[in-house]
Image 1: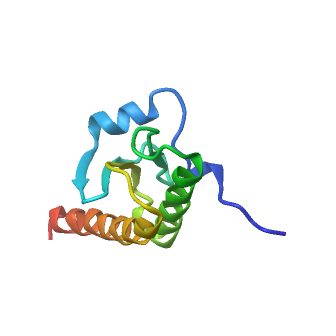
Image 2 (image 1 turned 180 degrees about the vertical axis):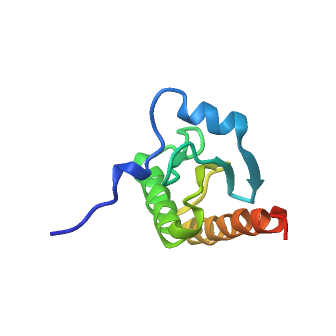
Length: 121
């Protein structure tokens, strides 16, 4: 039996996306924009914004979403203090999805590194 991801990590509910967009810091890459705000409750949650204007076919949007979920899963212990939204800024071809994955991991790393620099020593 396959174990699936938990819904407790999913950003949802009335105004959850708006709150993160309003209060969050933005980190931009070539493909993605990461918006992160301190988590309202532990563990932090993650949401994805992949519009039809950016990727027309649902199969392509789902492929990108799966890649982003995997990047988040790999970085999960270090980002649990944040509510995070990944927004795909522009379309990508199927052979470019791996680049999106690499960029997602880099953006998550910069999020953690930025906060490490801001903490008083």
